[in-house]
Image 1 (cartoon, rainbow, N blue to C red):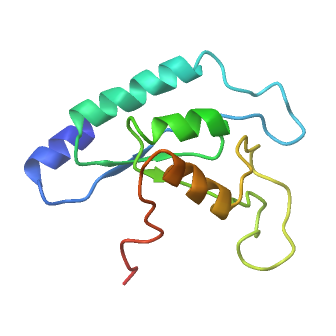
Image 2 (image 1 turned 180 degrees about the vertical axis):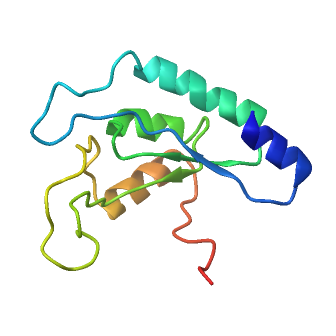
Length: 130
C-alpha cells in the first residue's frame, strides 16, 4: 500500500520491490522458509504487478531455477545471476561465511540464455550510478 501511495504522489519516481523468502542460515537448517511456498510467492508477485504495473520486481537467487525462469515471463523484471553470498565475496577479498543459501547457482551466461529461451531480451544494465 505504501508503494502504491508513493507511486500515486510521485508518478515519475522509479519504484522497485524484492520478494526474497527466508532461507536456512549456514549452520542452522531449522530456520528455513515457513508457510511461504512457491504458490504464495507467485500470488504476492502477481499482486504487486497488478497493483504497481510500473514497478521493478526482483526475483532472488534464493529461489530455484525453474521458478525464476517462469516468473520472469509473468511478474519479475530483474533477476540476479552469478551471486556470491559470502561476506566480502564481492570485494575481491577472502570471503567469510555465507549469509544464506542460494537455490539457483547458475552463471550469468546460463541465466542470460534462459531469458533468451523465453523469448525475452536480457538487459545487463540500463542505468548508471551517479
